[in-house]
Length: 623
Image (tube, rainbow, N blue to C red; front, side, top):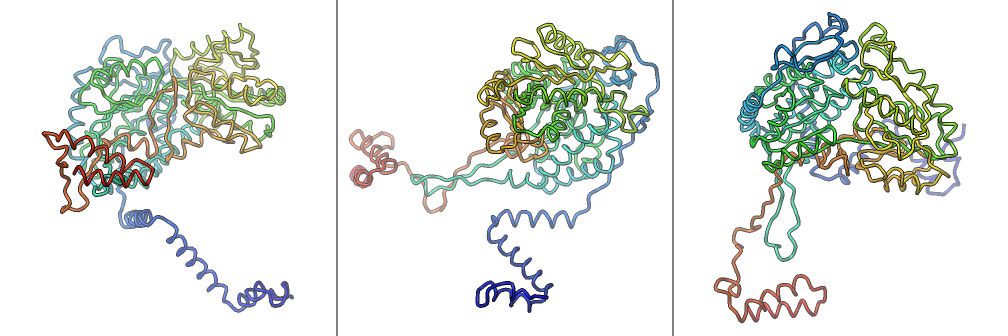
């Protein structure tokens, strides 16, 4: 057997190293190499970050996370826990008792139970309690806030089945979609906020500039107070907890308004949050859930007790929220409609890309803020794309996700949640077909199922004059748009033609070209050769432009947006105090005041050295 030294030229430095390595014990070499990497890492990494994460690791190793128990009803705890016949008409407000909301399973049209249809007075009481609880909460340490979030996460990871069952029952989604959209996103949000939240919210030093060199300046991130989060119905669990996670870490109280179409599950999800607060010794009033119709929403948006509003929903309602918030100048974040695009360039391998297209269009029956509403396909692969994608869409299985077939994982596409939304989707599809679009499959409400099911649909030949090109669908409809002549500039034009600008994705074999093209999309988010991954990276901000709204949640930007950004300036040395120079002290010296201030400008801002020196002499002369 040849030795390492025989494989290289004698006398070379490589040969010398090889001979040395022959005589070193392998275990010693591995340990030494590991220590060398650690030392190099310490030298390269920001010292503060290293100390911060060291403290965090120690905290996690030396603290025990409480276990909470949350009682469940039969409907919450069992797949077959709902009894009763389907209703013909799903009436939200109980006609016999206007203070109650009826809650239904959209997959079966069975009555699940009732929730409060809260009045403005009831909302005000909730806000007052939250305000009072926040006065104590804002004094807590970051470690105490993390413990509450870790308690929630412990419950979530130990009750995935329960949470997904309740979500599926409320929203009609398959359990796989519930895990992806409710559990993974929530756990990653908690992990990110627990790991980075304190670091992101620590006071941040700012440069002072030469004229203020005797000062120290920094920004503090102070809790705002009461945050109102108005959530949609598509992901009941994640939507109810998303802003609670960041709001609590920032030291705020959070009052959530759930959709009237997703009020049944709010009780169970709220119990989880309250138990997590109580077991850690905190006031459960800190987090509250409001259920009800427009009166409750208006009460939240117009109350002077509210310090910030985060609204997720349609663009028309977002405008009304903005109008209501303006009465008290309440700041807000609007995450509104979307018409997200997925671009397939000519050089993609279709077999790799089709699963992303399917998931983007049909997950949660297309009811996703960043769901793919438009598939832009380059002309050279357009026909082949349709040939391959249509059979996949036709093969999707629909049904009740909690029935025996659904429980066995044999349901790919669940129901839609809002009864009115089915009619909206149907009208958009009909309009497109009437104006020349080709309907390849689906295109109608599923006649073989009792619930609110719209068949998985593929439409091609979509053009700008069709309503579906511009309007948000929010349903299981894939609209395919041809990019003529594989023209990148035409692709960019088609993408930016939309009034919305939330998310976008582009698939290509040329990463650099994909990034260059995608960066010209007028959207708040972009993924290259992936779909939706930005939301599983919770260090990134989430939000859009144009009619998709403004402001951001998630990431350092979203967390700091839940704080009062307070700018602070103090003297670096207490013996060096600021004084008003005599020439500009009142009454101003008419002969020296202006020359003195002009000399300041020349000294600090003129790039010419001679002028700077002249400024110094001017200060001396007029000082």
